[in-house]
Length: 94
Image 1 (cartoon, helix red, strand yellow):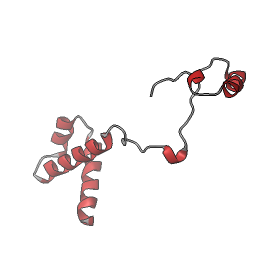
Image 2: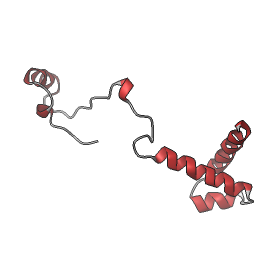
Image 3: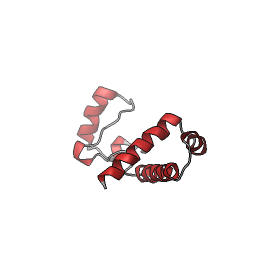
Image 4: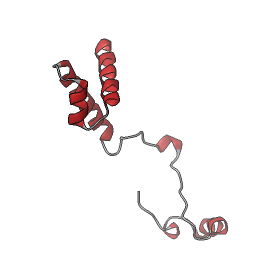
């Protein structure tokens, strides 16, 4: 997210009112609820994580140990166990 100069987007009367309250302070204007994006939607990180987890589960099913997977993917054993549990649940749904 980049900063935008308020004088470039607000009418003068609105800018004057904002200056009354903030007087040069940096403020954050949140998005409207209906325009918010979910985590990972913009960057694709959610999809990357899903693909990585599927790969980890496949490696586990092919015989790799939890400790090996944790080391090779730079995750904790607890995280690997969580991924395996989720993989089993998804597999049961299919």
